[in-house]
Image (cartoon, rainbow, N blue to C red; front, side):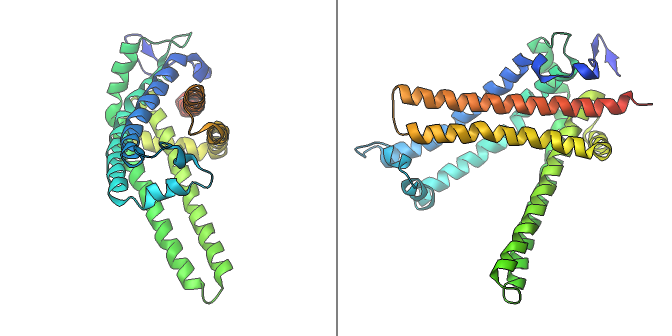
Length: 294
């Protein structure tokens, strides 16, 4: 394990998300701010289109969601403006989010016995890894985009080629299988991406070397890696589903109901961030184990 000026990896068994609650809080705060930035242009468009309605934006909460679909599909200039704004915001957020992500990884890998690490120390160390994390993001994003484009194009071609000879059920069924396989490849790429991020922080290497180490860690423990990622990702959908049900019941109201909706939303975000931190701590332990082996 590398060490300089007392900055050394903690024991592998100590890389636990529960020790780094403040770093989880930083990531949660980033998610909250990002949500506000994304919501602002959407709220502005809704205010323009529904500001004169007697019920305000109440129709957008109607059962069936027809007014919401109309807003998204038929309000051309407004929807185009929102989409352009969201594209810019999400691009910036993907890059800027590497800083809180790096702080979380640094805290998991290099925190003290009680899991704490000074904010300025964690921030400084995360900036040391920023370039490696950024290059990893670009490389894996391009690979995932290639998978998706190939899946969509290949699925359309497959359905068109088989729809007359095999019939619609078989054609669309095989097309769905093709798309599902591509989705699995994207998920595997995401798992390897996180293992590469863990390697960049643990071994302080560049993006290519980190990706190579991540691939090796996945090769040696692919079952463990996929299961560890999958059950946490699945668990992260539960608070979203519960929150969506409650918000559908309370949506369109102000006052206390609005505060309850906001609290449920933030609780769901916090749970998902905690599960994400738990998976990253698992990825760090898997990658660090490579360096502990003879």
